Image (cartoon, rainbow, N blue to C red; front, side, top):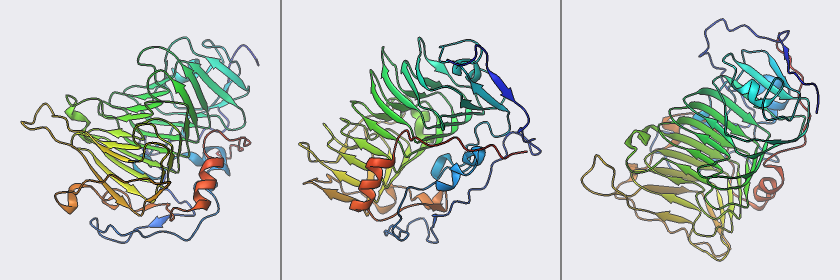
Length: 377
């Protein structure tokens, strides 16, 4: 179980000379730089890759900070704080994960133990935290994480399974949280959602995650009365939705960029657009089982509008296999859906292929990798 108390390391604490909102400019090796104007919708990609993006972030511990692609690209987590070592699998108390997550100061949280943490209540994560599971195998069960009114949180290389109770999500992001990156996590079998993003939470990236054994996978946008969710912006890329039933995601109001994901054998639909939502689906693989239609549209009425409306999906370079029917609706005009280059200039994308499918099947979710050294000084 480790020690009964946690350990802090301040020797690698990098001073923040420019204030807590400083971000690191991403410099990944496989980026696609988009030189085209926002209305450019053709499928322009890199050459074929042999691995997932972000290989460079495992070269040193804090290399994760500021390296997310997409809307969550400014998330720095606990970059400017000391290391906090989780030394016990206990639900609370010194040395526990909960103890570190409630701290007010920035922390880069790592684990000295492997095993299952049974959460008796939802674990709230405060701002400027990195929960870094590299080097160990940590599973959270019973309840999940809540990111409430916080910013700059990175969650990496954890497992979530067996959350029980009403409104119990694996990771719940609400309200008004921003600059979040969820990377390389395995999520399955919760009573509500696996990841829910609602109530004006925005600028979030979900990458390299594996979703399985679940019904309502990912809800983005609370309900038609929460018109403030028009601010929501989420990027979801290089994820594997493995037989989960629906909501990959279901979106209200916000903007979502889906790219290089593999979604297979859904039970109702793959992706759902509802009131005023915009989904840019790029170079994903959709492989149907018994239910053939990938895209679903729902009509709902925003509380500040007189007439109900639906959302819009733009499919660019997607691959539909196994008898999949896209189910796309004709958009009334070309600019109903945003183009990602309106918000960020580069991301990693390749044509959908059997090679990509194989990589996503075997290299998403929790990975047995060593914890990198902390090279900051």
